[in-house]
Image (cartoon, rainbow, N blue to C red):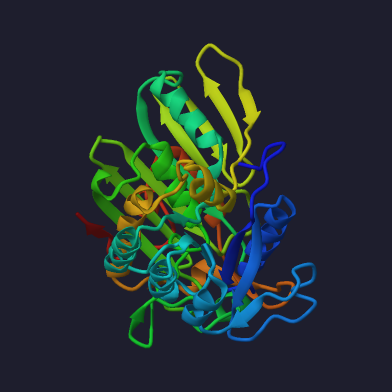
Length: 391
């Protein structure tokens, strides 16, 4: 969405809550949309005010650590919320009470109850909410769904996703809530599948056509950790859907090397692989050579602006993340992650801090995506004493 020739519109005032860390990417995107004349940065909500260098090119937006006061003083039409997970619901509802529409960073909430409270509260306020799964703005998602529905890969057998990333020990010390399941009695649920590689889960569910909460039949989860944290850093999950499909996601933050996460759609006569951060799709099917396409992507804040000004359909409204939140809830309720025995991981030097590497985990993650199997079914060298399952 952009202003066409001859159109003159007043840029929508935006408040950004959480402008450091990952919030920096939102700040840069707001600057891009400012240059297009779509928005203006009216305020920044941070515990420590941004300095002149951080706000270079933005003028002097209002700053406050109190979002309620900032929404009142700026009259912002949109709030972008990129704050700790456990603060999402209350801040989204604060913005909605001021009549502002919300772009809410993923995961939208640390529990299903908090997610429903947020979604219902925003709806009652008559405002819109877009959940920040940027991969679901990729034009590849509807394109792959069409390939499935038109039978290009035969009958859908299942969807597997793989994410193998490298994160050092400092990553888990970057904030008090990092690597926590609960902090000061409040749910956080900051695990590999629920936060850093949450896009793999949400994208796999979208390609399976099972994004709503009611699309989930049951969930099996295996949660492990090599790092000295409370949450999981090496995990897998299998979601059985009401249509009979299986969706598996295997993830680790303790890989030997960083690799591009992907989702693999398995059909009876072919498969589709989607590297969702690159919008890259590979179609492989019987009787045809491989076909690779790189798709475009719709920015979610730009889409939210288009929704507010022109009635564009939202790409990722809360209802379309209900199935993902069922996964978050299953992980929240699962037993604490199993500590991997030291015999199965080792420490390597990182750029800024040591990192723990689970031996052979990259290959295991890939095998899960290719076979739709859980770690315990793939001859993992470690023995899991349980598998958490919810219905």
